[in-house]
Length: 512
Image 1 (cartoon, rainbow, N blue to C red):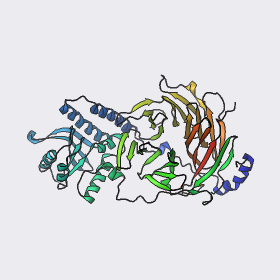
Image 2 (cartoon, one colour; image 1 turned 45 degrees about the vertical axis):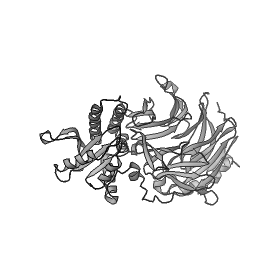
Image 3 (cartoon, rainbow, N blue to C red; image 1 turned 60 degrees about the vertical axis):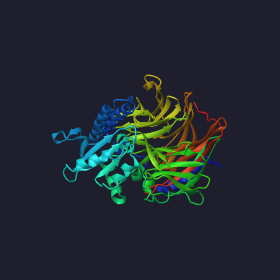
Image 4 (cartoon, rainbow, N blue to C red; image 1 turned 120 degrees about the vertical axis):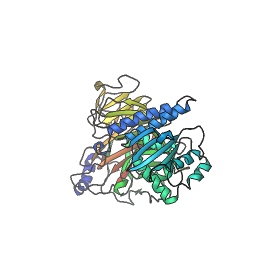
């Protein structure tokens, strides 16, 4: 049964006193994120060039190859390496597609963009060329279309030639990995297991490494909460603390989403956790370090999530990683529209003079459609309808319509009734639910009807250090239900997530 506000405050007084006056804000701060505005903007330009190469009309294969060589050299330069393309050998005996130096090691890279997988001939020619280079020079072959089996068998006997495919290059283009890190990981794997074409997933989610058990949540009652979390509910709203646990700092949740089959996908810096709300069992949906914000699972079972400035898709059956988009260095959030579209809100650099964009995700890297956002400081872009969003922020929030020019003006600003309202969802195109904490464990869930010029309705109050995110499980005329992910760690170093299940029996009203 929901408690009254007065009774709830009395019940929680002891818990607050025990927790202390100062509480850690576990939300990653944008100033603490690895931000390189110059690199991010350059990667966006190179992604556009990559799209142009992919969409080039048939024919002109040699010209596309030359442009691809230039793109690769510029990509390496963007990451801070010394690189040049189309390098003629002594007496004009050979020509190197791309030459570059990384950590005092010289590399010769041969790039092939053919219609079919290449055979061993380019590999043999590169091996012969290495015989005319100083000792320690390494060879790399990149084939966009892949390799024939004889080529893969040949390279096993030649340890100074590394094979790359297009996913390795897309990881660089999207900003997920730098070239030095990529080469270090690939050479470590080939040194350990023998030379071969190492898929990107084998170095990012290696099957030979056990990630350990996923962090667990237990029903409240089996595990005692440090204090009652749910304080009060409005008429027509019910809420109950359902699950909690104590995790390690790398497992601090950054967001979560509801998935089919009574599952919740909880994202941490250690990977994405698949939590079953019926059985209470946690498993790894994707043990990929560096993941952040919400993960989206499609009807096909594929999992899409942000990771190190790139948007990646995990294919669990084939254990492969697909790059979808990139150039999202800095602060980024992922939003899935009810129409099936995926969007990334991204802020890089300072609030004024940096880059603030909303990006619609395409099928491949470079297919992104980027829109400048005239509203600095937003926490999340909530999808309302095709082209329409609601941007939550401290102080003021704003409705945004990308079909208009400008998409929004200062006249569209509305007062934000909660600080740090990154936890936000939209049950329909007119309603936004958002939550935040005001310090001293005072957290609240509000509802804003965008059709009314009224004060948002307060639906629920909680005692928590932080409200991490909201997830919808059911919406309709009969009401809305979902989950709130909060943290009650107090002054301890370990995150203590708590899942609160809530239900709104009817469309909430706002007060004037």
